Length: 403
Image 1 (tube, helix red, strand yellow):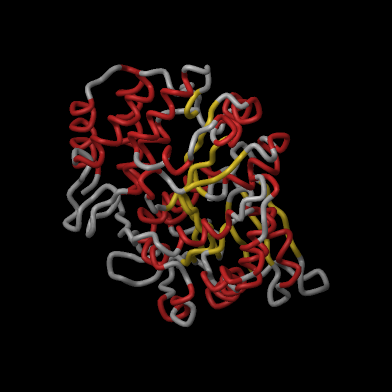
Image 2 (cartoon, one colour; image 1 turned 120 degrees about the vertical axis):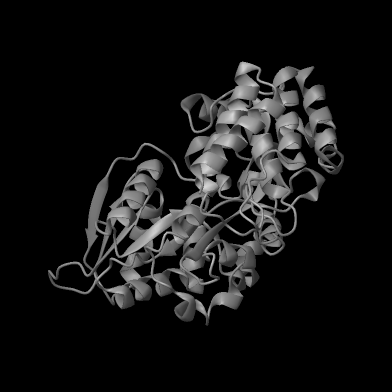
């Protein structure tokens, strides 16, 4: 799940078992999971819980240091999907294979796989998912006579839609990098990881990455994006003002759009599969127990509570955190129309994607590779670097930094 940035370090104690007892547990995380915890922990009387919330990047930097030094981490930690592969193989988390076994079959298989180490054991448990989708402006789609199915037939038809919109002064997307990110994340070859093959060799000069870069470069070169950095005030304004017609993201973006980013645009939005009916995941969160915790059994009690059906549904209601627990998908809530999306029953689409994503093995070098590929993409889009050169440079750096 993607979370808003900029919240500083905050520590809140929730005394749940009565009296003035010292907290038993601490959960380290990032916004806006604090909103979910504040809403649900009143129903968890087994232990006292402290929350230590830091902004998204700072939280993961701190956790990396905590794991390296063997001290300073909470009893339970929240981990973004983009970081879980690099963390689970460092040996710093409790093996939860046996504890999670009774629940495993009720969780999205691809997310279960993402929380496993190279040894196949479960070190991180999925708590929410990010089914990959396209949010689109209905007033720039059906209201202007375009057919959604035709637009999303494949990536070329999607770009043709952008070219047509440009003639009316409408941008296809805020930033072309989202197009590339979607393509390389959602078209992984069977047996490969996102950035590495089964032997640990980088894949970043493969046709998948070249095609992703080519799509983004076409969008940028033809003036179909605004070159607007995501998660900035200008990006938020773009949603409110209708500057761009689509945004590729996780299902969780709905919560941000309707709650604080652009609530006044209610009814102007719809959501769709990605072009070429591609299934993939965009974000997601995991819970893990650092081995340095002095109370791992109590820490598991908290995780067990947070992955229960009722609490998974509560997270969906409170912060639009899409449940990792697939048994929740039969809840009547999933068939309810969503006013913000002009009555679309979008949660059915989210669930279909979540149940059809192919598992992708994480690699401890994923975080490094993602950073270097992001830099290479910026060099292509903003500096005019040749695609093959940028990818070859990234491959060399990945091989040097990932041993």
